[in-house]
Length: 206
Figure 1 (spheres, helix red, strand yellow):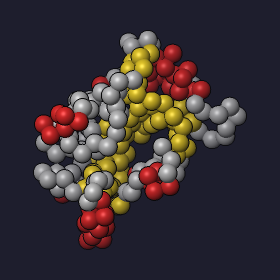
Figure 2 (cartoon, rainbow, N blue to C red):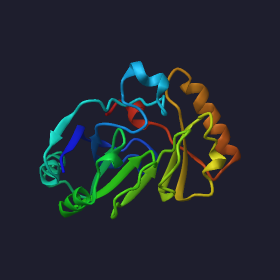
Figure 3 (cartoon, rainbow, N blue to C red):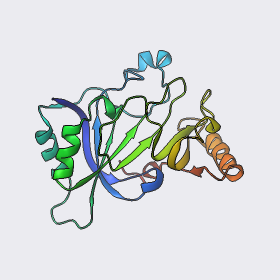
Figure 4 (tube, rainbow, N blue to C red):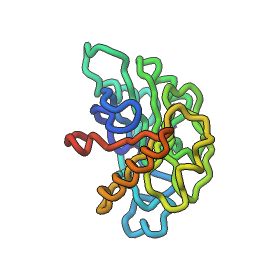
């Protein structure tokens, strides 16, 4: 199947349990919770997205796309390769064929998803970031990363789910400092939750 990709780049993972790890980010275009157009943000299910996922480049098949991903990893670099599949909402496009092709090229495959769509088999790392007003189709995985605070999505709603790690990530924007203090306070009084900050924004990398 063809794939539409917004961008592919190598960087350090900036959030969550794998913060600081080198990875190739494969960002798919399109999302099922917002069309990405500012004029429609107020009516979107998710209204706080800070990512540009509109447009992109079309790849005709998995092998062509994986060649591009592999080219972003330096020749001779040591260690296990990691690709973080994100969006938009990557579950709209990521399929078994692409996961297998990435594995064949030596990549661990991680996904960052809103969790509203079922996922292909064989993923090595699943990070779900729930959004208020949605129903989760993915209720287990490696980490749950809740943007905080969200009206209608309090942390206690998700604590029964089968994830290895639970993170609160302060919502970005004009109230980021207030949101960060609120997230810190919640983590201090609810130690099951850990604080996740967007370190890539702090140190100025993609």
